[in-house]
Image 1: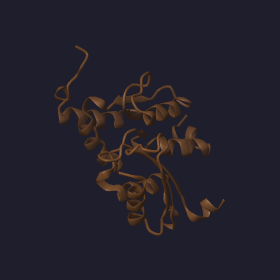
Image 2: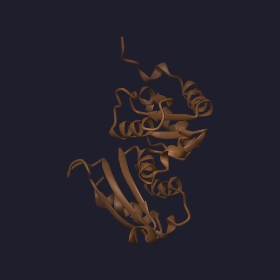
Image 3: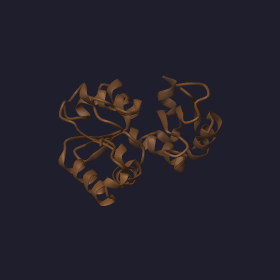
Length: 81
Length: 113
């Protein structure tokens, strides 16, 4: 998968998400990603639940096409800070 | 022979090992490799963060039966990614969440240290 495909899945699954996906190891790496996700859906959710929303959006791709994704999640208010 | 094929561990043994490790230990980490020799950067990060605060962490290397461990962990955490950290039977997170808790200064308390 490429970063655009990963970002598209997250945008599809997480309501009103602003998403940035990078490959932290190497530009051509196609299975280790880092994602920053900002969404109002994270409000009042624990970190585990915030990450779960993103993992759910990635579905079966995670552990199969995607070896790992480093996640950073913010609510819009947190991101403004 | 040091190589252990996956068939050495039955699915039942893996499920029992996961259930018991989570139930019987205050802090449990399922990781790729061992604390001395982690086989993945995320597992390395997770064990390092935990060991800043606690020495008594029970670790399980999932590599000998990776897919079976993923299946066995899912009912406990809702996810199949490795690593996974549990404290007092409750899922805490993978390496990103441990790092975030550490950054917030909340990791020691979360680990009961």
